[in-house]
Image 1 (spheres, helix red, strand yellow):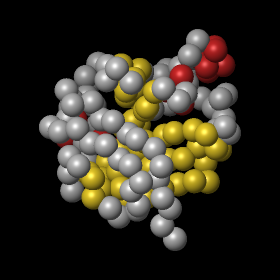
Image 2 (image 1 turned 135 degrees about the horizontal axis):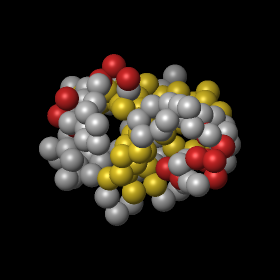
Image 3 (image 1 turned 180 degrees about the vertical axis):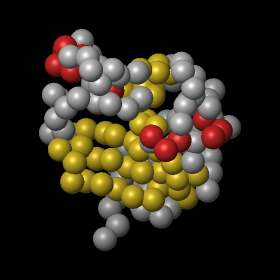
Length: 134
């Protein structure tokens, strides 16, 4: 069963060849900017104390990009309390770069990315949208 998406995702124009806005798209639909939504996972549960281990790209509503590196050995509870999970708030968006992609310290080459996950939260429910470059 295809699920409807009722949110906007803005990928910063300065990092991708063109802007992509997703509004009421379904699985399998193509998006602007050569991206296709390939999966919607609505079984995830928000856990504010989970220890993040991957690099995440944070896109704030001003279209500024902040790259955050998480140290798996660090105190995750402290990281949560200092706002490392703020990307799940309503006014921010996040892209998780999947481990297979590879990245260079401090900089990510968006042209080499072929798949990514987008996370959004409503109360304690997390939706994970997986996109693939076409």
